[in-house]
Length: 219
Image 1 (tube, rainbow, N blue to C red):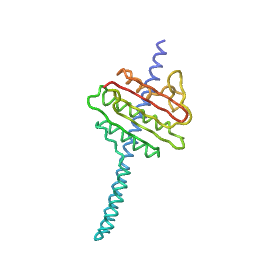
Image 2: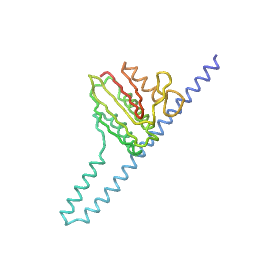
Image 3: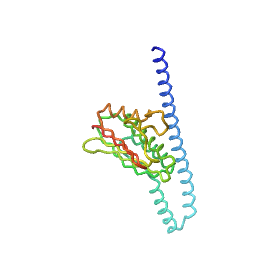
Image 4: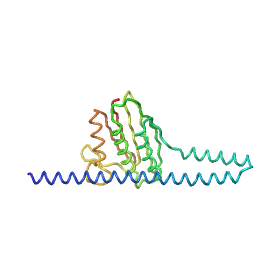
């Protein structure tokens, strides 16, 4: 029996270590993508300055160029400002990866003051929800993700829906991870644990081509 518990403990430790390494790798990918995007903006900014200098003296063409540039910047500016710095960081880093994967995204988020849930645990929920949504979109012909974060019925309401191939499989009452048959998945387990800790509400639904997660946490 002691040998069983020892082997079981080692297996759990190995799974946790693999999960933590996966999180670190994803974080590095997110940071690298942001840096790559910033370098691209810097390069474009330099080219725009050179173009405007070349148009010096032609006020009409300069104005026309600036108006077109403003339209482009309006389309590029997809930064979400929720009112919470930590949530802004995790949400925008995930959005940059979603867009890099050519996934259509619609995001609306506002974080109220005086939340009952900690900022770190809220970021864990958001990060895992969006990681799962991106994984579910793999192989979908026209992938999409919709995100909503706000106050509903005096509670913090989080909704993430995404496209998926077919219908998500379940093991008992729990949905399986998109990574395979290894079980519920550490990301899903973390979400479940936090929602339960705060006596919140969690609902997952899967229909043909669509997967939805709804969470309500007391303020």
